[in-house]
Image (cartoon, rainbow, N blue to C red; front, side):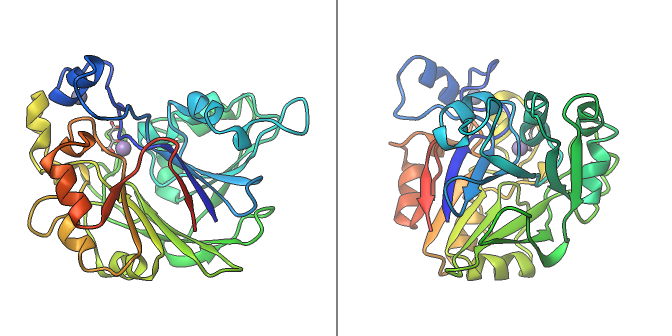
Length: 303
Ligand code: MLT
Ligand code: MN
Ligand code: ZN
């Protein structure tokens, strides 16, 4: 299985357009050992030709340009993207759908009912696409059940509801419903190898822990180092309140990842305020010592 990290940053990317936090300011000034990051998305393929896109970020145009296998090959208009799985309805994961409107075929979109609801009401991007390329929407299981994608041979997908957060324009923002956010296991049928992907993960419930334990590689929520990290940029929002388990706290992501034997543990969806972006920081060293990697744009994982 080939996995390509298209965008490893959280909403806003790194540096964020209006941000002068230590990380963003130092990156612009060339004073930090850190990589710029676009917004949250990966692509997965078994044969290296037919790809499933996970999330469609506002930065998708640059992300596709940066990964030639996703670019046109056969017809005058073509793409390597055969289907799109949306893990939630947040702006950083869905705005890129608008950029794909020139598609010559309807977009094959796999998402839950709550996500479909948000994307046809509060942020009606799927309804808008009906005026362009159109969309074939496919529901996905909430209970860890399997689904396959026609034309994508040798990959099987399993999706489950998890605790994170619906977007501000969702009626579920303060009334969480199963399916506002999902985690997805991607299994290569021929090898049995498994990826677990959950870029928004507020709590490691038993079924999430089980999926993490059974995986060969994790790409999980790396948004914040501390719960109150957004205070640095004048925001009172807490990581947990907006659906992200911070890394450093007791019961946080580092501690949880310490309990699973998964060979590769990789953080993704890193917010621009997170000190782990500084590759020379003590926080980054702490991750390295714990055997935890940090995803970067263009990262390739072969499972
Ligand atoms: C989040 O992950 O909390 C959101 O995507 C933030 C955003 O993009 O506004
Ligand atoms: Mn996000
Ligand atoms: Zn910043």
